[in-house]
Image (tube, rainbow, N blue to C red; front, side, top):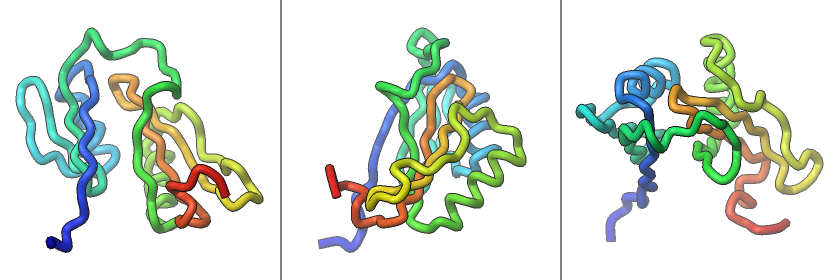
Length: 137
């Protein structure tokens, strides 16, 4: 059996490839593994995110639910560095950083960014990482 961990794969719609590559590579610091006319593959912190050009599926109305995606950092410093970078670059926040469920075992810090196609990205850091996949604590 391999020691490699499984990777998550996700596909999402974007209005154009150029603004998507610029945002994820130049603003968030993600590696872009493939750029084609109608899609690009983004290395989203070790996971495969494929941005497919689909302007008809890009919403002009930005809502957190039902669709958003993101990354859960295992180190608070990584969360802080991305947050500081987003602030410094004046990236569009859907929600600025806050503590969710403060004082409870499920306490975590989170913030939401909006990409150029109005996709919402959530970034989190859990105080107790053992509870990330638990329904209750």
